[in-house]
Amino acid sequence: MDSFIKTTILIVVTALVLPSCVSIQTSPVSGNKRAYGYSWEQELQLGKEADSEITAQYGLYDDEELSNYVSKLGNELLEISHFNREDTPEEYKNTDFTFRVLASPVVNAFALPGGYVYVTRGLMAHLENEAQLMVVLGHEIGHVAARHASQRAAEQQFGQLAIIGGAVLGESIGLDGGNILQLSSQTAQLLFLSYSRDDERESDQLGVEYSAMKGYKAAEGGEFFTSLKRISEKSGQSIPSHLSSHPDPGEREKNIPELAAEWAQKGYEQTIVDNEEYLNMIDNIMYGPNPREGFERNGIFYHPDLKFQFPVPAGFSVINQASAVILVNENQDAIVQFSIDNENSTPEASVKAFLNQEGVNTTEQSSTNPNGLNGYEAEANLQQEDGTSLTIDITALSYNGNIYRFLSYTTSQQFGEYEQQFAAVPDGFDRLTDSSILNIKPVRLELVKTTRSGSFSSFLPSNLPMNIEPLDIAIINQVQLDQNISAGSWIKIPKQ
Image (cartoon, rainbow, N blue to C red; front, top):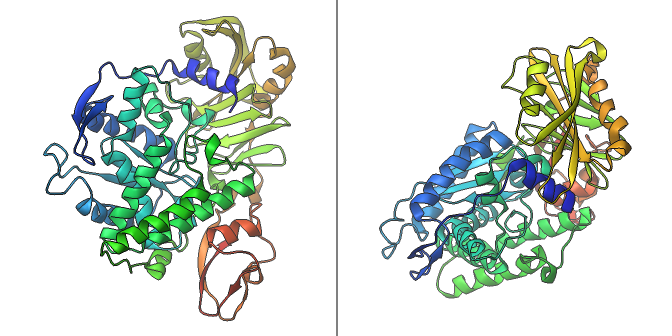
C-alpha cells in the first residue's frame, strides 16, 4: 500500500483517535508497574465496541460446532494463563474472553484489547493439529495479557508514531484500503497499531508456555510458521526480519521448538497433538474466497447471491470484503469502492447524502439509466490536509430492492487519466443471468485417507478449482509436492 492509499484512507476515515492520558497499572504478566495508553476498564470497553465492527466487516464462519471447539480450547488455555494465577492482580482475574472464527479466507489471527481473539477459516485450513491451534490461541491471549496494544498506544502518545500495519501473529492482518474505509477510527487505530518485535517474541513465549502447561506438543507451532514462510515466498512478499517490525516466519519457525524444549526441561510433558480430532473438525471447511459472495473472472465481477455483475477496468485488482468491493489499480493511485447503501432509499438521496458532507464540493450531478436501471451520478472535489485535491466520481443505482453505490476517486491532477475507466464500472452494472455462475458453489476441503503410498502430488485431482495451484494444497497440508505420503495418511483435498 503506497503513500497515496495511506493518505486517502486517513482522510476518509478521519484522524485516528489516540488516548488522552497515560495510565500507570500493574502488568498481569510481569507484575511490574508500567505505562499504558488505556486503563484496563477502557480496554474492556474498547474491545467490546470494536468486536461488533469486526464481526460485521468479516462475518462469522457459519459452523457452530467449529466455533464452540475453538472457544473450548481457548478457555482451557485461559485457565492456566496470567489471567487466572495465584498472583494475578484482582482486576484481571476471571476476565471473560470471546473467541471467534471469522469467515475470511486470509490466513489470519489477531486479538483486540480486553479479551477478544479471532482466527479465520483461512488459518484453520492451514493448521494440521490441535497443538498448532493451541499455540496460535495462546499467542493471541498473550497479546491481551501483556496489554501490547495499550503499550503501543502509550508510546504513540509520547510521540512515537506506529507504522500502519497489522498482525497475523505479527505478519499480516489482511487489512487494506478496502477494509479500513469500513471501520470507525477507534477500531482502525486498534487494528493498525504495530506490535514490536519484542511484543511478538513475548507473545510467542506466552503461547508456548500456555500450550506446554496444558500438555500440548508446543513445538508443533513452528510448523505453522513454516507454512507462513511458504505462503510469503510463493506470493513474493517475504520480508527479512531486519527490515520488518516483527520477526519473520523463518526465525519463529526455529525459535518456537526451542522455547518448547525449555518448558520440557522444566518438567512439562508435551505429548498432546490431536491430529485426527482437529482434521475431523475442519473436514468440509470452506477454502479460498467464497464465490457466492462475489468473484472476478476475465475482467467481470460477478455476485451470484445478489445476481449482478459489473466490469473491472484493466489493470485493477479486486479486494472483495463483506461490506464493500474495492478496485485498486496497479499504481495504487486510483480507487473504486462499491457498496450497498442501507441508509437511503433512492439513488439520488444516496448520492446527495455523500455530497452534503463537509468539505465535499460538487461540480456536477444528474440522473442516469445504465442498462435501464434507475440511477443518479455526480462529480465532486475534496481538499486534503496536505493540500492535494481529490476528484470523486459517485454513482448510485437501484436494483433488486437495494441501492448500490460506486465511489471512484484519484487526485484531481490524474482524474482525466482515469475518468473513462471510472465511468465504465457503474455504466456496465447489469443483471446476472448466466446459470453456470448463478449456481456456482464454494470450494471445500475434503478429508481423505490415502489407500496407497506415493508423492503428495499424485493424490491431487488433475483439474483444481478456482485457480488453486498444487503448491497451495501442499502448503495447507504442510508437505512438499514431491514428499512421499504413506498409506493410511489423512490429507486435505479441495472439492467444488
